[in-house]
Figure 1 (cartoon, rainbow, N blue to C red):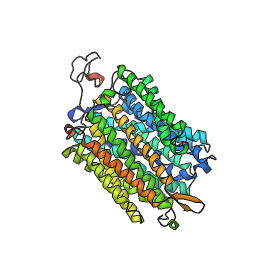
Figure 2 (cartoon, one colour):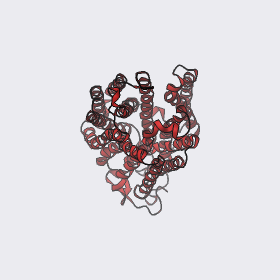
Figure 3 (tube, rainbow, N blue to C red):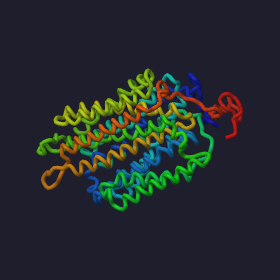
Figure 4 (cartoon, rainbow, N blue to C red):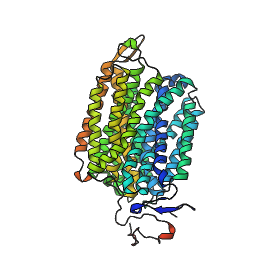
Length: 511
């Protein structure tokens, strides 16, 4: 059956289906789920420097606490998206949030390295909840609500990260650090209950079976690509391990791509991915992710470095988190503005506007680092640019794919953002590690390093702007409203459809 027993369905404008009781809650509930995932991602940031001591291990080993979440999240987003298209998006959202709760509890009850790394890896699978939430909105909401809803959901990752950072810093500074993970588990459990009660299951399904071999190939390719990206600074970028992993990734992706093109129901439809609008949006997403993460790497260090350096602002962990938090607030506030801009001028214009603001803001940022209030202004400017750019991406992606592919397509787009943030972490990390000044017995990043990091972010935004300029003009006013391909099966309540029929009641063609 397409629906659960007792679930009351009502068709909204345009044939979009949602529960009569829960339709109004779809956007805030799914956005809360996205924010809870983002909080989970960033909650460890305030204690990164203390992890070797807390886990009784070396700095290199402790970095796996971050790397494990990065790898599992990258693998999970396209996989969870495909599972949602096949078996129900709400069902897989609940699975994603459930894994976040499980992983959080695993971390909360341990102070050992291996269980902590395992728990963080399990947490990473929650990343699939955000693209799946966007897919549910596309299936359930009428066109007039869809643009603003997708914009808000898309920005939830940055909103949760920015708002969660000061809260996590406060908890880490004044309570036991394990409380961070118990809090994450609690927020995730609340999100699960709200989704189960207030979000209807998506009626749209993709025919076919799950591509197990494609999943294994994609997992191997992503691990061999992102592992050297994230650990290259520790292992040495010219080391045999790093070079062999990059070479293996190239071979694995080539073989995987050939395999995906030859099977009837691939994990990732590469032909769809190669469409101009989808391909260029994903490439621009990498640049946005790269630009976004530079701020979160630079400002906390600048704010917490002692004033004795001559450029550090000497603030506490909590204050530095509060200075970054306005970025999340700005992202939240501009999401509706971005939706209106996309409706009036098209999501391509919104994406280019966001990238332009990012480039200008980072260039200004090279001169806005001498006072606390300047970092707050910079956080707001970057938040505006990220919020507008992030909000445009789902509309561009969904405007080019069928409803039955929305989960996987959005999952892949989220993966592209993750690749951008991973690359930013690696590149900026190398810059800050090499451009240092002495501070007592140690060396710390200097102002030239911070400015270079901002220039790299500005360059990424400019490159993204150039990529976005080549998006097809036909994407102009397409805000991602649901479209249906001929012969695509959209499940309706059992009482209103006959076996093997489409929405229009015509026989479903053999696939």
